[in-house]
Image (cartoon, rainbow, N blue to C red):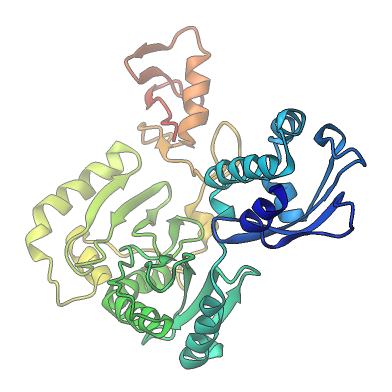
Length: 371
């Protein structure tokens, strides 16, 4: 009776000897097969049984060993134990998203056929599980972009996850008839929609000294552009309307920034979307930006007066003494810690009031924001 039940419930797990003390084969859980070998003592007592697992099964059962030992001690027979083993495995697989159902063979054959149709030259990387691919695409200006595609086990019935370094997320319209070629073509169209945005940023990067970000990605929409020594403007470019007037924030000592802010407010009406963004900013601010062809970057990037470094992790000195005879720059974090340690300083909400470490004139700093 038990032999018949064993064959019915576990047709891939077979006895290797007449005594039926060694069973070898596979157990199936959630359409996935796992190799096991179970060795029983001559009296068939499960308490002395030994369970040998394939490496995938061992990985899944980490943390469940004590439960399996209990089941071996209390299960009335081998069929009952294997049933309980499968139950434990189902729980383990639910708690491990990386151990979900293995795709059927047609998943792999279809994936290879789709790659052949798309072109192997578009494939930069594929992982050993055939789940994560990196596809490359080139926009009309010759910029290279990478699209990471994470396929689901039920692909193509289930839409893949697409990740790229873009200022506007790449959203894919998906049907079960869609393919990798469809993904790639839609990706190229999305890139073309951002071509003008990248053109604007390329102009800024090539013709000005960009202080932040140090190594901009294709998704970055902000540039902090040097205007002079310890004076800069932070611009936020709208990827959908890159030639429109961007959000601007002038940074530096008040006696330098105030006249620039006045010009910005007075000349906004001069902004012309048909002109380049740099030309518009020159006209509105009535200035010429230092460029790599006219200025050394070192002349525009003075070290912090406290730590004597230019970069503190990713931050640059952006707090400046407002006294025109001083103008010493500091990192926000350095100045905050310095002022907080002085008995003469006082704090109101998130602002610390104190004296400049160099000229002793009044200076304030906001509490450094923590991400």
